[in-house]
Length: 314
Image (spheres, rainbow, N blue to C red):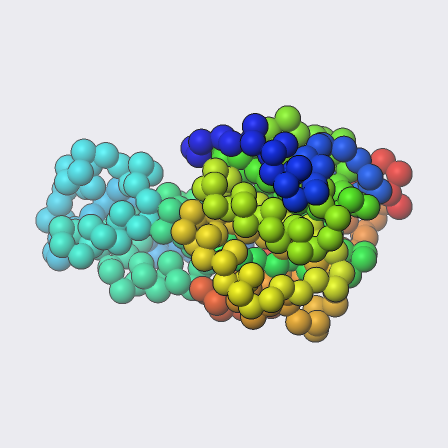
């Protein structure tokens, strides 16, 4: 958990000409989340169970030979794998253990899975860990979530905001004076508005300056810049923001309005996602995140949520 410096935002707002208030300007509908259909991981589990027969359970390890550590990881460290991160397990594989877990990942295999599956070294080493739309994918990175006017970027971003709050991390949202999200919709999916700093600024460069101040504090798990269309950052500003996000392991997200074939806000964007929304039967919507650029794991992966529209959205 980070030290909370939200009380200093009024001073910051006066310096930048911003208004750090949780207020509504022009409401933008937010699609509330409905449980997703069965995931790929759930569908493939029966096959994985078959392949793993005879390998042991999730806490199994060996030091080079099958059965040479009958007590599993707890006999080595005094704790189970669900209390350890992927990074900790990978470091242990360099000197004290070899094959790990139910599928007996050897060092090269675990590293390959980590790189290709969009995981973070901070993710817990549990059976549930895998590629997904989660805060650890964006931590320490400068990301952009774009969409055309009919897209659903707020739905996707607020999933990350909610996860960050559940982890005890403060959240900051920077937006223009003319538009912001609709607070009741955010509250409806569980976001704690009282624990979220919303700063309203007159133009994009002011948003960049406010973001830099917030990142330098090291107090936020996620900082969102909701900047709309025609946003572009000079290279020196991109470099500062990306460096600060990396230094403090903060997820820095820029929400923009553009087509998928239009360029990012800058060349130093580490993760570019384009959001699309399609309507199904009645009030059901399909919200898709298509990864166009990912400097860490490569493009091509994505995320889909099936959601319901808020009252009045047709």
